[in-house]
Length: 401
Image 1 (cartoon, rainbow, N blue to C red):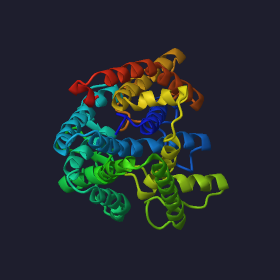
Image 2 (cartoon, rainbow, N blue to C red; image 1 turned 180 degrees about the vertical axis):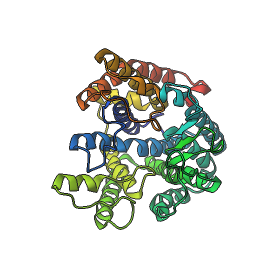
Image 3 (cartoon, rainbow, N blue to C red; image 1 turned 30 degrees about the vertical axis):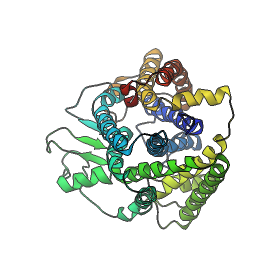
Image 4 (cartoon, rainbow, N blue to C red; image 1 turned 135 degrees about the vertical axis):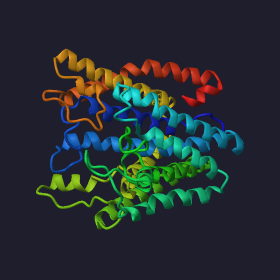
């Protein structure tokens, strides 16, 4: 490979990282963030729905492109033994970050006695990398079949029911129920016993492991001639997107949440798009990865522009940006609340298990978008500096941040 980076991939990764910050800003700033799911068609509005829906592209592509990035290292000549070792050590590092640093910057507290850990996308990426460290020794078509198979068929297990904690006084999951929560059903688990601090497993590992494996196999597309590659990306993107539309229309398999005709055409359309993220259903992944293939085909053409360079900067430092955007989004929410004289106590709580925010807390969507844009711009100089450091230096530790 002549270049050390693929600009189109960095562009897509940078774009989804910036959009991801919108979701986290909304989590901290919006006055209804803790009241209901913004994709709940019965309660949402179109603008709130799409503010959340557009961010659905982030996690699948974050994981998928992490797999693609691993394959790119083989294109640069890294032996599989070295790559496997790197995937294990980086995977363990990411799990450690999720359990420590990210728990602190997401909640701004150290109240581990009430919530020991919050297992999100970095946890899922870390665990998936450890599995990928073994898978890379298989032929690429076998890795692709493994990843696609897990994505396509994991919804067959949607009907498996296990004990889930539903509040004080209700049963806690046992060992095997907890294993299933970690693997396929999000929920609270109690690894330290019923009286110990719980762990929120928001990102079950299935099918994220398959998404990363599929992303790794996808990296082989970049061995193709650019013209042939663009044609392949367009066909793949159209196929996956059409697959989503057809399967969603049939409304039998691929997502535990069926769409239904609502009292307005707009709500019916929103219901059609409201697929399940936890865990990501087959339809959720078709809906997000399909259009992204079309974007990569478009971005694969050499087009130099300031806007393109802006997003590529973020795409070259994804983990660095990911950690900092939590801190910035959270801090901006607190500062805005203090300036406006609004309650901010909930911003120091374990939000995912805490009661709803105090009356009067939070702002409307206009403020969410304003603070998101401000946060993205504040992070640009730091990300540009760190991208420059990574481009100039080859210190081993730069691969871990």
